[in-house]
Image (cartoon, rainbow, N blue to C red; front, side):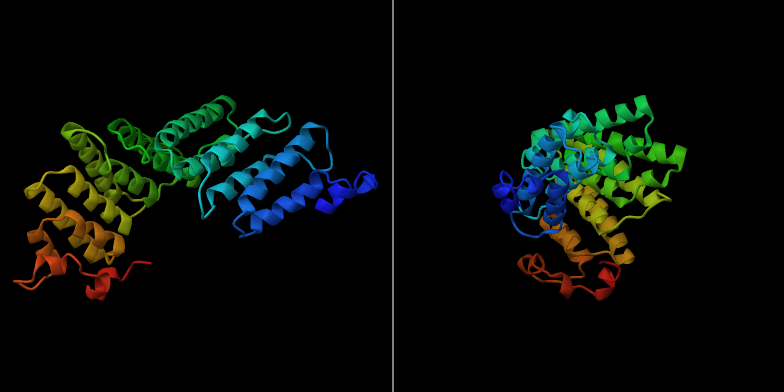
Length: 322
C-alpha cells in the first residue's frame, strides 16, 4: 500500500481505494502484532474518508466498523474505550450505513474494560438505552438487544459499583429474565454471566452500612434466583462472588458465617471449587468457619491454613471445573 500511495501520481490505476484498504483491514484484524489494533483503526479511518468522498470500489457496510470496534475490545494489551467510541460515532455520522446491535454491544464491551469507571458505567447505560429505544421505534431485528448486550451493560456497571448502579444492574437482569420468559427467544436466554456480574457489582458496592445492606439483599436475591433458575446453573464464579458479597457486605456474625458455610458446602458438592472460590474464601472468612470448611486438623495455625492451595484440597471438590 505504501508503494501504491508513493507511485499513484505516475500510475493512477494503482491508487489505493476502499477495496484495497478493506484487504489491509482484514489482515490487521487477523494479526497478533502489538500495533495491529492501532493500524486497524487507521485503516478504517482511511476507508471512511474514501467512502464519504464518493469511492464506490467497495459497498458501504457497518461490518468494517464493527470489526475494528471488536478488535479494540479483544485487545490483550490496553483497551482504548475512547477510540472505540470514536469509531462508533464515525459510524453514526456516516451517510451510508448506521450502527446495529453488534456495534452497540461491542462498544459497550470496550467500555466494560475501560480504566475510566465513571465514564464506563454512565456511557454504557446511555448506549444500551439508545439501542433499546431504536429497536422499539423501528422494530428492526438487527437492533434487538440480546443476551450479550445485557451482559456487557451489566458488566460495565460493575466499574462504578455505587448502590444506584447495583440497583440498575439488577434491573437489567430482571428485564432480561422477563423478556426471555415472554418471548422464549434463544438470543435472550440467560446464562450464568449476567447473574454473576450482578453479584460482583453488589459485592463491590461503595457506600455506607445502609447501602451495603441493600446491596446484600440484591446479591441474595440474585444468588437464589440463579440457583432456582430452570435455564442455567451456578458456576464457580457464582460461588466466588457470593462469598465475596458475604465477606464484604455483612458484619462478622452468625449470618455471615452461615451464608459462607452453606454456599461453600454446595460448591464442594457441585465440584466447582476453583482458585477464585478458594481465594475469596480465604480472604475474609472467620477462622472457625474456615477450619470447619477446609477440614483443618485441630491446633493448625491460621497462618498455615490461610495459605492453603487448591491442589492441597480433595480433587472431588474441583472435579467439574474447567
